[in-house]
Picture 1 (cartoon, helix red, strand yellow):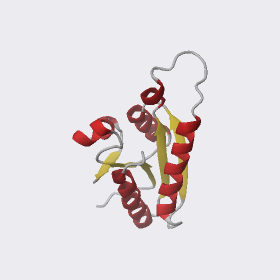
Picture 2 (tube, one colour):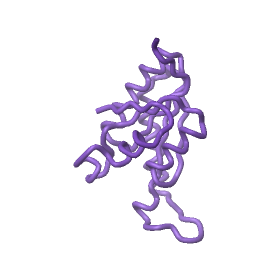
Picture 3 (cartoon, one colour):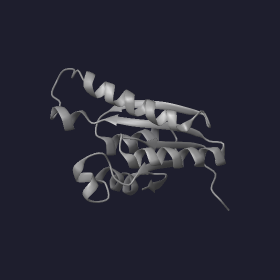
Length: 141
């Protein structure tokens, strides 16, 4: 018996693989009449070092995240119910936590991320999500 997915999460980081994942997630959502959440995580530590006390202003990252989400949402073409989410933190941890908190039953993620080191091997974020998510995970190339 095929599993029916109702809440699908696709994680995007601006990489080609993440946009490919949006297309795959959209098709799965259509077949399952599921809700689709497009998530991007602003990795503040990567750009600003370890965050100390106080608030960090991230206008550049905010703009990048908005652009990534807008492009991803445009790929969906209103074919399914979609919601976009932008959060900050360590992407691999935040994706897994978000999925648990939101009752996601399938995570769709690109095989590698936008970073140089992620392209050398199966992305560290992807590997972590596969190993730690409590729901099914689909990797898209």
